[in-house]
Length: 97
Image (tube, rainbow, N blue to C red; front, side, top):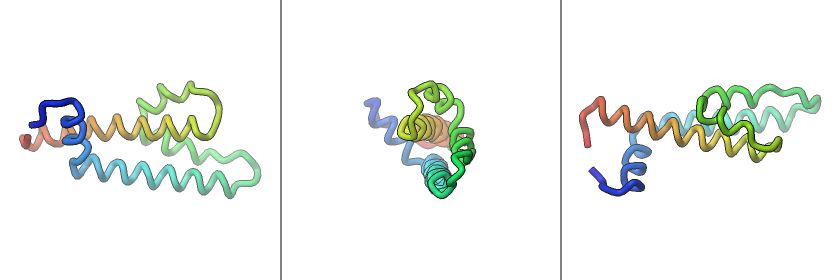
């Protein structure tokens, strides 16, 4: 097992389940941005789906200033935190180091 913090993070984030979760979150974010860009009424709620998929970490960062980039930052950080936890749990349950 890697001894450094970055080595442990890399080890957790390269797990198959963590990578699959990150891929789903990326697809949801791209979908939400596309739907919101095509909606001319300004009332699109598509951004809620990726926020809920990356909760609870994304909800903590949702208090950032109101701008599209801040919502994207909250979703990306939430996805990375949750993927790290998923990777650690997956490796621990399989017993691999």
